Image (cartoon, rainbow, N blue to C red):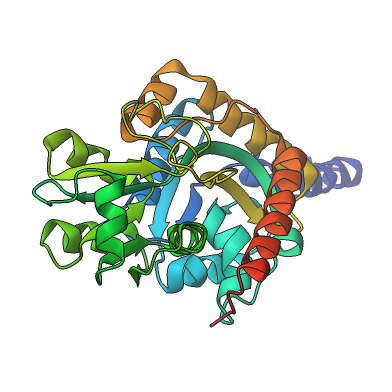
Length: 323
């Protein structure tokens, strides 16, 4: 016979179970796929690198990372989209030098501030830019490039960082080539291979396969030291441009307000993926250099803030106005 006491115990147990069910259903973070917004088109260097990193994360998170390409306005479209997403760790941004440190100073439409709108997760890679010409071009080295640059040479820019690097080089070397901006390196590569432009400046990851096949020829890299993947290609400094050192970087960031415990978990997972020998080998083969800094979330944020300050000053001193 159901007594009053038994009934009360049964109701209390049911209430306790009901209260516990939401927490059980929700599970631990992450309990669903994580969306990684890549603010550039598929097939370019940024996209290739993002996919290598996303693949590597399978070993380090219980849920997959799903790439979502949102290109446009040199990375501004995807970055603005990420800024508006919930700060819950389920939407991340593949943040690069151009989209986070340069665009707000170059484009009026880039209405975001990476210092306040995003928090760092991990600094992934650091690599220079490379100037290439078609393999059948009469331009064989920098001296030929310099001569052609003052005779209506056109140079494709695979993104705003590459555009800035080419402008800084032109200013320092007193060159007068015509810059042709692209929203990403994929379309720029198509045009240089088709002969519609004379040269291109981009991240190495975009062009290494074409250099290996002979379709493109490297002329110089923008780093202070020779790039391991292109050991025979001179640096801008070797060619006489003292102090010229422009390197791009890839990072993972999240919308501001991300809980500290989730920031820590994600940072540790991405850094663990970067420490995998297979992942590092794939990145190097793709043409990017894994960062040796192993920065945590706070360290990544601090690095990006330093880059923003550096490049906003460079852009201002170069007399480049936002368009």
